[in-house]
Amino acid sequence: MFEGDLYINNDILKNIKLEFDKFNNSPIRYDDKKSNTLTTYGYIIISDNMDKLTILVAEKDINNDSKSWHYENGLIISAPTDTKENAIKIADQLLTKPHQ
Image 1 (tube, rainbow, N blue to C red):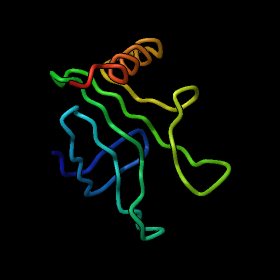
Image 2 (spheres, one colour; image 1 turned 60 degrees about the vertical axis):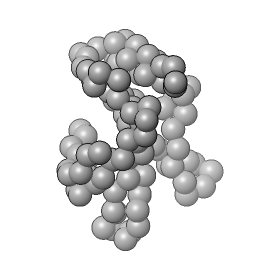
Image 3 (cartoon, rainbow, N blue to C red; image 1 turned 180 degrees about the horizontal axis):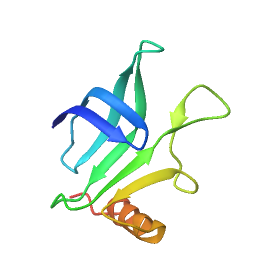
């Protein structure tokens, strides 16, 4: 479990709580003070030895008010890396890791 602030690019998510499941996955939700609602930022996946991570950034759906992430064109943040190609490799590894 992680509790605290999360800084992602220019976004500051205050007082969040990440509760990881047995596969090291967790939704990223925060209290949106503007709309006074619990808002989903995305989803985080961490490798089993905690040396890699990927954040799937949820984007507003143009057809309704919900947010979602799509494999074909969704935004990802991966670490550690310094290239887009390696970010995609890390995301693919973590998205396809076996769930035992």
